[in-house]
Image (tube, rainbow, N blue to C red; front, side, top):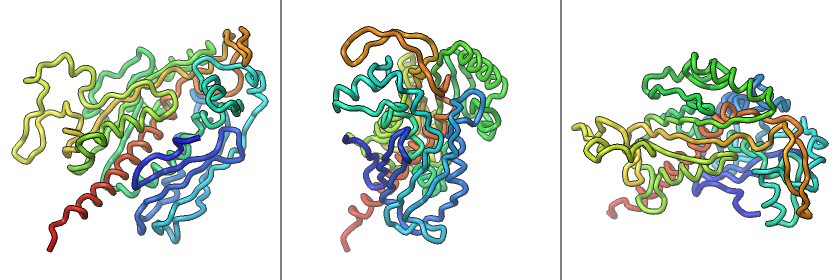
Length: 360
């Protein structure tokens, strides 16, 4: 299986399955001497872990990170950072009923067709549990990028949308509720709605908005490695993501060029930021902001029709512990992938500057 690594210089490779002994990763390319707050890393994991509230999966995993290499006396050594996260609360029997059949809108069928074999326990490698390793790496990337502030939050659940610009929100309120919406009134309505959906044995999707502030000018390459293109790839690699838009996004098509152009201030900043902090594929120093759309979780606790491995129609029902809405737990994942992209491009930018130094 290819495609288990992400990044160029700041590069993460993940391993493990949802119901295996452990999941984990190797983070290569992190410079030496970066102070690592291990409690801060664990705090990020606690934001993603299952069982944290009544509106997420009730699988109970401590998600404690064990670092194997690359950190000594609280600092990175410059060598690969290896880590594992033990799986402690698997209930593989909950998936025995799909051993020979395929769940609609899951990776079951295509895995079987591509590899001729699959781990049906919780989806194996295709499980969103893999993203825990990304959060560990992202937490380290955040500490490497200490000057950049990255905040993601839930801005929509189903048709319930928070129509408040992020500039007018108190982002310190993101962690004040289980939905991770910084608008308390909307958050309370979203929470009630998700609970209702859960009682129906159904699921619902949503949107996460992410903002990266204090990003320096110059990150990104102007042709195939545009910064926003890499952010899009990062977000679309997350389980259940169906869409990505940055800056004005799809709403920008309703504007005239005279309205949409970001006019300059004398210091090079812009009066508006429809560009979303990226121009020509390169960061311009303004806030980078984007939306990530997540589909409803595919596993529903309702009877449904599907096919088995021989193509026969069968009726089954979802079992096990699943999120009725994935977006509250996906907030730290979006932040982590953003941090990984910005860390990678920061190192790439340093390399380019060194390559193009004037010869003495």
